[in-house]
Every structure is written in structure tokens, then in C-alpha cells.
Length: 219
Image (cartoon, rainbow, N blue to C red):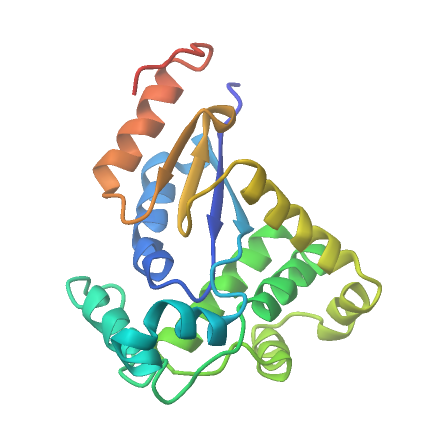
């Protein structure tokens, strides 16, 4: 049996483009099934949101301006609803805590369970306007999702979750990924970044699967 195509998928949970891309991820899995192995990783885009707003959005309305930008960006996508109150009424200080909890879930349960929890966290922020920068909120959501929070806390306390997260951050920097979302395929030789249409994503997968040993794939 041919080994599945590994896709290393890097996102920041507070990134609206990763929220929009969720439907494409689902389509990818529906179309290709076990022919692809999607491995979720995290990178630092919203690690310090206060500084990000001050440096990049101060002259464009600050948090309110960025919030409107997020709402406007998601409008064309029916599958990615966005609460008008995010960044205006709820302002997570960091995405780092969410990424850390997701790594703890991965260690305490499985990568698949962690991926499911990531979707819960995104929906909680973008739809329900919950502050997923807070550890108490994150652990509450994990418990509601059926995870063993006490077991997760062991990985948080002993540093294993942090070490796993730092590996993700380090690899994202090593590959000089431009941001969230990023799809890394073909041993790092192909990287798709940002608001990539599904047909482009699927075409790349199709070409690599058709020529799995061709290091010089043209797509």
C-alpha cells in the first residue's frame, strides 16, 4: 500500500484565514481520505496581540479597525461566520495559550483529538466571541469536549507541551513560513500559503500523488 501524502499544516488559531480555510481542509479529507495525512502544527502570528495592534493597526483603527477587517474578510465565505464583536469586545492577549493547550491535548489524547479541539477553539472565538487567550476558558472548553483535563495539566506542568509547541514554532521559522495558514508538502519543497483556493490545493495533492518519487514535480 502506498504511503499517504504527508501535509504539514501550520496555522495560528486566531487567524481568520485559517478559520476560512477550515472548509477546504474538510473537502481535502473528503476527496482524498486516507491518501493524505494532515498533520496540524502551529506558528506564531498572534503571540502578542497588543503589540501587533499597536505596530500594524494603530493608524487604521486599532482593535476596532482590525475587527472590521476580519469581519469583512470573512463575509464572502458562508462557511466561516464571524461574530461582529471579536477584537472589539473580546481581545485575546495571545494565541500562545491556545496552542499550548492543543499540544497538551495531543500528548494526553491523540493528534486527531487535538485537531478536533482546535476547531472547537476557533469556533468559540470566531462565532461565540469567547476569549481563547485565557487558560481557564481553554481548559473549560477542553473539558466540555470530553478531554481528560487533569492529564493535560500534567503535560502543561512538566514542560512537555511547551517543548512540543516550541518545536512547531522552530520548524515554522526554519522553513521561513510566511504566515497562517501554510500547507507544506513534498518534503518541504512545496508550500502553499494564505487564501489558497481548493482547486489549487487539490491539484498539488493530485500531482504529488501521481508522481510520488519525482523530486522535480513541476506543479
